[in-house]
Length: 427
Ligand SMILES: Nc1ncnc2c1ncn2[C@@H]1O[C@H](COP(=O)(O)OP(=O)(O)OP(=O)(O)O)[C@@H](O)[C@H]1O
Image (cartoon, rainbow, N blue to C red; front, side, top):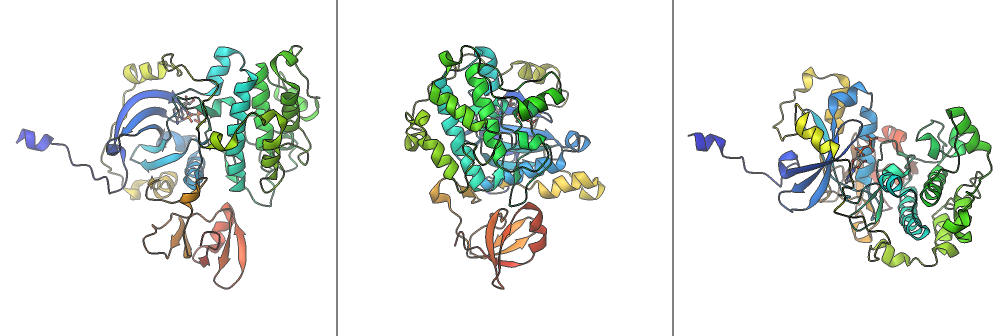
């Protein structure tokens, strides 16, 4: 009898993804609301990073909307130089993001250890990250928090953009909310007269400068000093700048750290800014085709033997955690939930990249939808076999059944719920 009651339940891999689908392994990082650990998918044996976010903490810190927003944006994208979302689900305590695993550490870790990185290495990262940025902007998404901490290396040494916590969709209307990490913020965010996706190219410029010279281009002892420096100080070079960076490299840094957004590198609309960057002499040694298919050998290969992560997270988990992560069956009763908990319950729906189709960098992943209905959680396709909610309309032009067409982004989605639409972009 005992043996019978202890027999593990078979795992339904065709059903909704949950924590039972994964083998939990070591802890590799700690975020504001939870930890990140390596996991193995029990069926495919693929390794991923599992980021889990404690729901109560998230409610307490008023971050519910951000977590849902991050999850929604990640659902839409798939790019070689982005830490892509593969699965998402929740249990009674946590929301889970299953992401591409990056075992090479973040660029803050390497910067602190090495002091600065060689120009060739930075050129390689900048090429990869520019490709990721161009893709995001093409999809009307701005990241808003580009900094070395949010750039992760895989074990081969390819750079990937992560942390879409404050990323947003953008349209014609300029944003005014101050968001991001101050030292990397573009002047137009700080002067509060409205900004758009050009801010990401500025932040990339701050990162590149810091990686090459080991210090940031604009500094200040207080927030107001820093604001002044970012807004007004001329760009200065360290005394030994020409030993660390070529003239072409400095031209790139100057072009990205240009206050006039109409002249800033990378910013010309419709991807032209990125095409111009690609043609810049500094990038002459980059073969863009093999770069984007990750066929090139990266110039810096993270040392797999040295810990790229703070081992204290692992120790903390072993010694101090009174409620270690464990797969548990769900008991949640929506009736007793606070409004925020219910919002998370309803909007942090489960996600499986194999069952969904999204706006991918990879051409074979294009949506193939003929007609669709806008619903509360996305768009329901009329094409047989296309799962509901696999298509998001934010930021793309859809054509209404009554003949009119409109550009839809985040907030306006509300207005078209229930309408039948013909999605010509993907038909
Ligand atoms: N995909 C990943 N693969 C490997 N390690 C990761 C991955 N994502 C995050 N990490 C590690 O976990 C740490 C915490 O990441 P996480 O994104 O949760 O925290 P964070 O940067 O503080 O973000 P937030 O501000 O959202 O809390 C990172 O610094 C990194 O070391």
